[in-house]
Image (cartoon, one colour):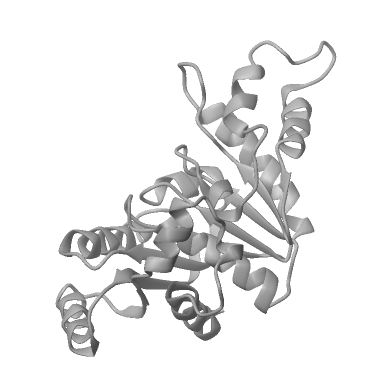
Amino acid sequence: MPKIIALAGKGGVGKTTVGGILIRYLVEEMRVGPVLAVDGDPNSNLNEILGVKVISTIGQARELMKKDVPTGMTKDVWFEYKVHEAITEGRGFDLLVMGRPEGPGCYCAANSLAKQSIEALKGNYPYVVVDNEAGMEHMSRLVTQDVDYLYVISDPTPRGLLTSKRIVELIGELKLTISHSYIVINRVRGKDKDRETLLEMAREKGLTIMGLIGDDEGLSEADAEGKSVFELPGSSVALTDAYGIFRETL
């Protein structure tokens, strides 16, 4: 059975970047590829983080399903074909982007069909990494109800920590089975004393923090230059900190 890893958090905390670093860790450090990466955020940019170009998405397939299903073919079979067509091959991973539907209407039917297709697909991969939009509802209705590892990503702000706490609380309200969940604070600045103050603030909110990822100027520069996480040097602060967390948790 594949291991399902999901990432959640509010917008702007660097969740997708951490997800990209995780995929690099699985491919290069654990050598467990190919990994299936699923970009579940309608504002998708995981492909840019991974350095691949996306040709088609599930959102586009949803629009085509209204008019392009051939006579004699069921929507289920046609959509499964489109899911396979939407897979982008990368270095040690395959990427599937959900995307945003281009027209009006409910996305529920496409979600349901995509979930069936991904369930069929995931058996071909040792690990599936899902980058979600904010919150947990999207994951519960889209990809899977069973998650082996959940990383809730926060930034070092009271609002970021509060959002992380709400996500953790929401897990109990949804029909999700999560074997292991961890809160990680990203883009942390300051010295050890400042970090201890941050951890104390988290403890006051009832949160247990798995690890901290330092703010990385090199990562920001690489992002501005359009470089992928696979081009980060081994000395990268973000890479080093994130790898330390993954070694302890996976």
